Image (cartoon, rainbow, N blue to C red):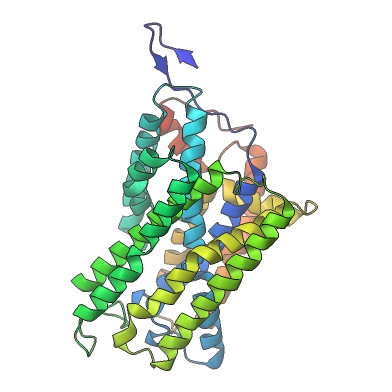
Length: 380
C-alpha cells in the first residue's frame, strides 16, 4: 500500500504472482472455444450464425459440424467467459483491497478502460462482447460481496429473462418471419425486434453467469478447492442436463425445418442448458488441471493469461483471412474448421514463449498501465 504523503492511500499495481492455475486453464479453454462460433460470424455472417440453414451447410459434413457447434459450443464458451469475468471482478477487488481503500472505484476505472478497448474492437467487428461486459460490470462490482447463495439465486433468475424475452418477442413477429431480417436470413440487415432480443439475451446470460461466477469463486469451486468427488458429480450432472437440452433445441428447430416461427423460442432449450453445461465444462477442466502436468496444460494456461490479446487477435485473423483473403470464396462450415485449427495452433504456439520472456500479453500490459496510470515493467 502506497501513501501519497497527505494521508491518502494510492492504488498500487497488483502483483501477478500466486496466480490460480485453475482460472488460467479455464480461461484458455474458453478462449479457444469461443473462436469456434465466432468463425461462423467472420466467414458466413450473422444469419448462418443463428440459423444452420441460412448458409454454409452444403453437405452432410457441414451439417454435422454445425450441429456439433450448436450442441457443444454455442453459448457455452461465452458462458465460461462470463463466469470467469464475474470471478475476475471479485478476485481483482479482493486483491485491490490490500492496496487501496476504494477497490470498487479502481475496478470501475479498469472496466471503463475495457469499454474503450471494446469500442475500438466493435468498430472492427459487430460481434464484440467487451463493450457489453464493461457496461454491466458496475452491477457485478456492486453485488460482489453478497452471500453466495444470494448471488446464485439472483444469477439464475436473471438467466431466465432470456427465455421470457424469446417467448414475448416471438409472439410479436409476423407468421412469415418478415420481422427477423438478418437474424435468420443471410445478407439482410437486423431489425429492431431482433436487436432487442439480442441485447436482452446477451445481458441476461452475461449478468446471470457473472453473478454465478462470483458465487463459485467465493465458495472455492472455481479455484479448485473442492474434493475430486465434488467435481465429478458437478461434471456428470451439468453435462447430463445441459447437453441434452441443447440437442433437444436443435432437434426441435430442425424438425420445424428452421421455420421463422421458432427463431427465438427455439433458442430456449439451449439457453436453459447453458448454465449446467458451463458448470460441467468447468468441473472437467478443474479435474484435468489436477492431472500430471503436460505441455498442453502449460500452453493453454499461457493462452488464458493473454486472453485479451488473443481474443483481439482472433478478430484480426478472422477479418484478414475469412473477410479479406477469402472474402469472395464460397465458404462452408467444414472449411471453417481449418481456420479454427489455424487460430488454435497459432495461439497455443505463441502465448507460452511470449510469457517466458514477458510478464504480460501486449494488450494486458497496456490495460494494466492505463489502470494504474504508471509505467509497468514488461520484460521479465
